[in-house]
Length: 271
Image (cartoon, rainbow, N blue to C red; front, side, top):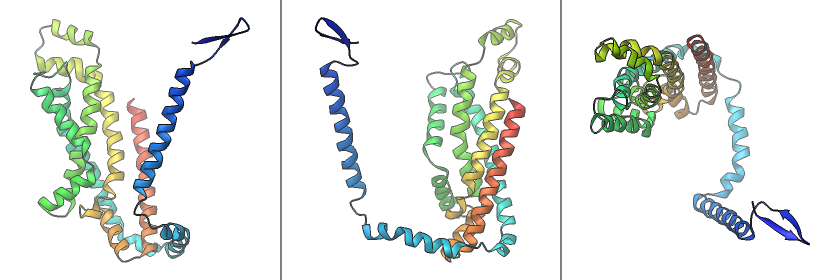
């Protein structure tokens, strides 16, 4: 730390004068960049609408309350579809992510030069594209319906599960692997008896956590035609039936809360 002297008495300072000027210049550049970015983002903003937003929001809330509870009977089947999309999509993601994770992990991949880069590319591609974008593409390819939603959730889940799982594989205790190899076990036996038991709790926790996330994501896939309760939400929004939208929001919120509770209980029991 720099020390200055005043009347032969050393005085501690956090930074030198040059460092202080550099810090001030950095903060000034950050403020200038923030102002510039704000101007770019609000260049086409109609400020009259922004000023009128509180009144419009109040008017919308007046029309959305009280909820139309009679509409609830029409939501059970779409809600069941949403749960199926999340569950089957998670299973599809697991089926693909597990072998991809073993190919991506340095200590289990058959080829660091070929197999591992391909596996990492699959993981990155899956994580880079949102499930809503996957659903848009799949609806255009295979048509609207639950199948598009299931595949979209599955493709999105591959990257999440694969990345966390291959990192867990790379962090295993290698001494257990060496002990099993010393018995003359084949490669598949080493995986079964030395690697899988170590990563099984982590794998179960990752899978349940991803299922919990997928319930939330599958609730909106119907907005692009991929089935589930999002179809009802899109219909109600199109008809400006705000009291029905309120009921749908309450159902989605309750479903997410229950899934969060179930996920926490299952992870707690496993881990």
